[in-house]
Image (cartoon, rainbow, N blue to C red; front, side, top):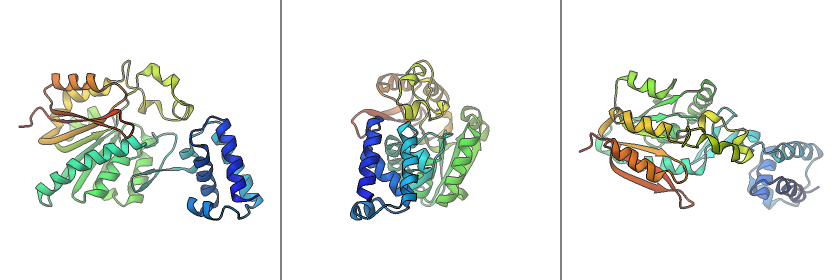
Length: 292
């Protein structure tokens, strides 16, 4: 069996199982099995595949066909230029959250420039894999990030990712409920970034199996309408920010109007909504009530 034939066979299996982008995922699984870049698989597609590698690929394809996420099989997920460990205890980073990181950097970099080398304080509320905290700390050397995570197993994954990326010295990881932890810290932040649970509880049962059965529900379930965390943020997070600071939060489909009204009611200023790559409203950007 050649590499091309192995990929063709795996792609058919995955397609029959309802996996999106079955050929791409077949290539990524074979890349994982062989430990060589995907481009080489394509260039050397006529090379033979050893029986041992074919057996290993078959095992991975069989598991992926049951809708175990690709990232759980390989043990990692990409995030911007970083490679992050993921487990069942963490939400798998998605492109929408990469965009959230980009919008945050668009505001953090000018803040850092204005501070002229002085530390800028960042809060990542509900860090999960640590993807946002890691990306911001890596891109802005003067950033000091406080990353808070309520799940101890998820916090351990984040801790490993911070160490691997070389930012552990500039990221303080705290385990606990952020709404209780942050007030006890007694300091203000220049930027708060968060991807909180935002799905209405009843919607989880209808999600794709990869999400419904494998992502931690604590990172998904946002209450009856998905807005529980945002209500708490709108009410108290203004006290956590410097007057020239920013709060950026990812949110779910069709939640933008309710969030704009909610934050306006609590006095937040400069309310903006940014779209994701599919053109859907996805990121809330606001200034604190104390902003001038």
